[in-house]
Every structure is written in C-alpha cells, then in structure tokens.
Amino acid sequence: MKILVAVKRVIDYNVQIRVKEDGTGVVTDNVKMSTNPPDDNAIEEAVKIKEAGKATEVVAVTVGEEKAQETVRKALAVGADRGIHVKVDGILEPLAVSKILQKIVDKEKPDLVFMGKQAIDDDCNQTGQMLSALLNWPQATFASKIDVQDNKLEVTREIDEGLETIEINVPAIVTCDLRLNEPRYASLPNIMKAKKKPIEEIAASDLGVDVSPRLEQLKVEEPPKRKAGIKVANVAELVQKLKNEAKVI
Amino acid sequence: MAVLLIAEHNNKELRPFTLNAATAASQIDSDVHAVIIGQNSADAAKQLSELPLLKKVLSVEGAHYENFTAENFAPVIVKLAENYSHIVCSANTFGKNLMPRIAAHLDTSQVSDIIKVISPDTFLRPIYAGNAFATIKSNDAKKCITIRPTSFDPCESTGGSAPIEKVDASEEFSNTKFIKREEIKSDRPELGTARIVVSGGRGMQSGDNFKLITEIADKLGAAIGASRAAVDAGYISNDHQVGQTGKVVVPDLYIAVGISGAIQHLAGMKESKVIVAINKDGEAPIFSVADYGLEADLFEALPQFMEELNKLNTIQK
Image (cartoon, rainbow over all chains, first blue to last red; front, side, top):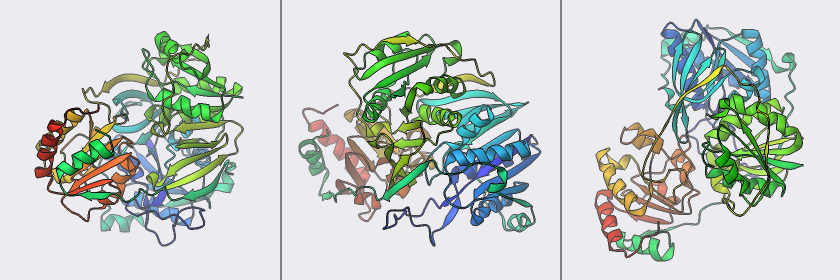
C-alpha cells in the first residue's frame, strides 16, 4: 500500500496572532512557521503503518511557496520516503489545493491519502473532503483510530455525539484528528538523512489547474475585545455578583 | 433563488442546531427551503415542516441514508442545488464532513463556519481559532456556507406548516460502510449546547479532584469542560476538552477553575457571555478575559462555592 500525505506550512500554534494594521491579513514576517499540527499526526500515522509492514511507501506533498518545502523536509525526517513540492505563490483556497492534489494523485496513484482534518490558519476544514469528492473516493474525516486491513480501513471518527466507526475500501482519503497519535520528534541523524531524500519540485502552472480565487478577503480585523472584568475578594462576593449582577445563576 | 438548508436529525427528531442554521439561512434570503435526508425520518420531517420560516420541506428517504454518510448525502444535494443560490448547514461535525463534498462537486469555494451574514454574498468568519475575524465575499454563482451554530439564535420551532415534498433517492455509494456509533450518554447537558460550563485545568492536580467540579456542575445543571493540559494529564476524557483543538463553547456562564488560559483554550471559550476565573496565580492570562476573577486556591474556593450555592433559594437552570 502506498500512502500520500499532504502537509501545510502555517504560523506555529504557539504564536500569538497579530492582525495587520491595514486590515489585509495577519502578520507573518519574522513569525515562527511550522507544519500544521494535525498534518504531523497524518505523517506519524502513515509512518507507523509502514513500520508495521502494511505500507510500502510514504510520500509527503505540500502545495505552496518556496519555504513550504520545510514541511516536506520535516516529514522526511520523521520517516516519509520522498517528497513532492507543488510550487505556487499566494493564498490558495482549499478547492484549488484539492484540484492540485487530484493531479498528484493521478500521477502517484496512492492507495491512501492522509492529511490533517483542518489547517489552523484559515480553519476551513475542507481540503480532504473536497479531494475525496473530486476523486469519488470514500472519506473518513476526523479520524482518531485507523485499523488497516486488506484493501480496507476501519476508522474511528470523532463526532459531536461521541465516536463513529466506519469501514472504507481503498483507495480512500483520511483526515486526521490530533488524538490519532503522538507525533514523534525527528532525531538529528534522521534530520541529516532526510537531507538526502529526494523532493520533486512541480510548478502548479504545469498541472493545468485553475487556481484563481473565488473568494475575496475584504478585511481582516481583531475580534472585539472583552471589556476588562473585575477581581472579587471572596467566593461569597462572586456568587452574589453572578446571582444579582450578571443574573446567570 | 431560494436558500436550501440541510436539516440535521437522528431520523426521529431534528437535532437542535438545525434551528440555528435556519436562522442564518433566513438572514441570507427570506425564501428558505429545507432538505431532510434519512431513513424512516417522517417524524423529523414533520417537525421540520413546523418551522415557521420554512417555505418548503424536501424529504429524501433510503436505507443508505440511515447513518448520514456524506458520500450518500452529497449527490442528492448536488442535484437539488440547481434550484438554489445558497446551500447552508451547521459547522458541526455533520456539516463539516458533508458540505465540502457538495462544494467540490459544484465547483464552489465554500465559506466555512460563518458567524455573521453581512449580505447574501458577504460573510464574517473567524480565522486563526478566533484570533482574527475575516470578512469574505464569495464570487461563486452558488454558495456553500456552513454556519457556527452558537453565533445564531435558534428559530421558532412550532406554528409553521410548510408543504413536504418527496424527492427521489440517489444511488448508494458502496465503498463506505457504517459500523457503529457510540454516543456519550450523560445526564448532564451536552458541552456544545450547555447554558453553563464548569471547566477544570491542570490546577485540579488529579482526576479525583474533578469531583469538586462535578458537584458544582450538578448543582448548576452545567456541562463539564477541561483544558487540554487536564486532558493530556489524564484527569478527564478528551470529549470534555474546550479549546481550538477541542470544542468551541459559547455558554451564558463559563467558570474556569485552575486554568491558566493558554491561547488554545481561550480560542474555545472567550466568546462566552460571562466568564469566571478561579486561579491562585493572579497573573494568569485567563484573568484578562474574565468578567469576574477570583484569586484563590481552588481547593478552598470550590467547597466554599458549593456552600454559597447551597445557601441560594433558587438557581436558574
């Protein structure tokens, strides 16, 4: 079984987001960037499946600007075999990314495509489902457990009501939840080794995909600030305030 | 053209967020139709037809719809979409799973998780876990929109009588098979919809100590939440997690106990109407979003809190 894993470069999850004063977006200059957290879980799961002898190859793919390649390099350092970097500048909508990934799937013919359930920058939660629609493949979103069987997977999904288990035939798409596994850290020797692993560079323009935006981002602003609250002296005062001032209990 | 709302239900009755999504749909256009897809879901369809703001209900039945698989739902809605300008549903796990599959088939760039309808083509949505708000204009002919349920009030649920029209089922998608659903049963309200949430963090120090929180939650009729730190430490199961990677909650009252207020956690609760923080570290970031802060040792404060609650004659539920 061959697994393709899609990874995205985003602002690191520990960075406090700052909105640009001109309202065109958020500050990204000199800001720490990392792999989108659930994409790390996707890579980890693919590598674990390969280590268990159930996959033959793990290919990491990213779509984005020059520096996005760092995320592929990181995937190689934790066990992916080779990488693909589809180069494109500017912001891409999930629909465009899924069309590009469709082309990569056509070329690579993987049995499974893994990715994080959501990117923590635009919070869209769309790409995996869209790719699965374009390919007419089954989708297992928000996966917290994956059991690989012969030509099928049993996947446990995190849903609002609890957990759901489905069985999907390969080829299939799985989007990964943070609870799926604990991503490993890359060891120094593996980081060195990863530098020798191949990364194929493809210009998005060569794929014949229309990636022009359909959405216009008119403005990005700070969310309204909460007005400063007060400190109460003791529990009795707190309960009185909740009862008589806020009227919530 | 009218707006098509996708109803969420369990085949017997509507799930509550359908009412919130209906409100959002009605803010896009007054002409709102709803589609309900299921198996033996006539009772839920009847209930849907009683929403006064709906003009029509489309009902689709089939054994392969019993478990709400997106691969089976999407083709039906894609076919219906030709008569509609917008497709709308909730941005919960049902809608998140389903809507992008519809949008891709329609070659539409979806607008996810909106918190406000500015005009029929322009919407406000949080990005970066709510640390910024983006105003987005969609230039697609058909728009696929998911709405954050807690940002829209539920609509009236009785008094209407929209006609129910049967629609033909689509073919079954055979490569996905439902196995089972394990719903977490609890006497307490669901975390996502509770009016009051009491949450514990790493400051609780152990799973046993969460009984201090449980006691208060029971008294208040509240749901129990937790920070990621408390979940990671194994004090409580992960379905209680509030935050960017857990659930986003917007209760009337959120009580954060022994939670420092990491960015991740604040993203999941800072839109709550009233926030209380109880923490012994007066510098903890949680106090910056709290309406009422109590700097105290939680192991003294929580039993006192319970005592004070017991003194009250009445408690709103």
